[in-house]
Length: 346
Ligand SMILES: [Zn+2]
Ligand SMILES: [Zn+2]
Image (cartoon, rainbow, N blue to C red; front, side, top):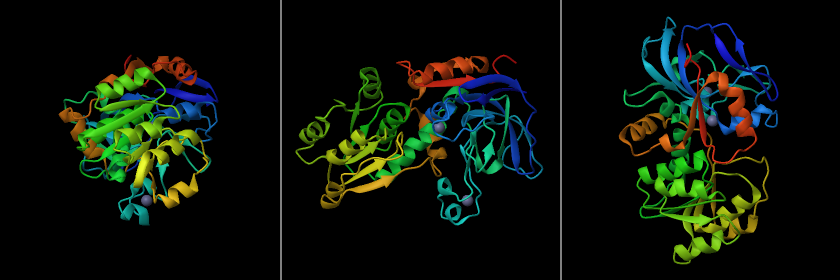
């Protein structure tokens, strides 16, 4: 089969690889669409240490079931499906608590980090366990369905934020996840959503997709948020960047007793304004991937409550993968989600 192989750092090639074997509880998927995630771009040059070559990356995908293992019952060949990016065991203490994103034996598709190597979906076929598969409604196109993983991540953050009824949320960062958080907040009934970013075009898109107010990303952000909330601050801030300045701004912009949900983690360490967090009794809540939000994500996308189409910059055949990775890596402006279609030319 044809695959986009990370042969070395910053070296992607179209390669011919064997079609994966399918275990008794696994499903072989003919991949129709697979999105390029920011984490793939960060792994591409070796900086994250999570994409050790040789590796087929890709964990935001959808396609058609080609073949199923002997023990598979819930999906059949021909079904249109998507699947979780996290391969969880279903048996450890965290899985039994429902926190499948925290599984002790967690693997992520298209990741190799030293502990494990798991082939991803930038290929004509990928094998995944049945338990992570979800059937897709007819009306969802594959390219949209490839966004479900990101939508589930956004919904997970919103769920953990516990925005009070009639509350105000501030979203910091209007990249793909930030904008999807805006949409998820609105779909969940949050009436007032402020959003900030350095990029005016992204802010305009966030506004079009449901943000009620947009704010410039500069040192005045906390003050402006206070002005807009009767001097109190936002009830919750969802931080979708992960740098010193943005985490500090989130802490400054929430009210006493407010919540900061930390989703972005572009840097491994940030300075924490400890006294502000303690004396203003701020709840800091990490949010990792998703845990059971796929059905909600499918429902909201199918109903139109969450619209992902404006976030898709391009759908391209897999042969164009190397070029798109370079463009994303170079941080070319105005690029949001790029979706590769491994079976487009076959
Ligand atoms: Zn991702
Ligand atoms: Zn587990």
